[in-house]
Image 1: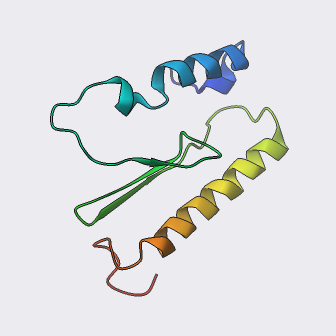
Image 2 (image 1 turned 90 degrees about the vertical axis):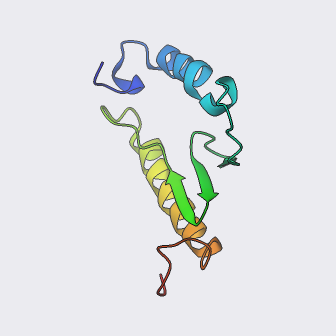
Amino acid sequence: GDNDWNDCPEPDVSWGRWSRNLMRLDENIKYEGHNVPIQRQKRYEENFEILHNGILIICTNLVAGSVLDEGVWDKRIENNVKFTTDLVKAYKGQYRGDRKSV
């Protein structure tokens, strides 16, 4: 469907299914010739980073749909911002878009 797990009738069950089937998908599907290292955030392992051939990819999970717990929502957003800014600083000079000070 077009909604996220938190809009399902049983959000905890839906998150469990998402985690079991989609979390670490790269490890569950064999890509021929795939050897790009993927680093995951410890707190939210659905957030990850890839630096490959001068391209920095930062993926964060921003849940769409209903806000089930505003405090949890706010912490996730704060975490995603910090995760992103920390990575931009940590990889400074290693990715192609970093020609000027970020």
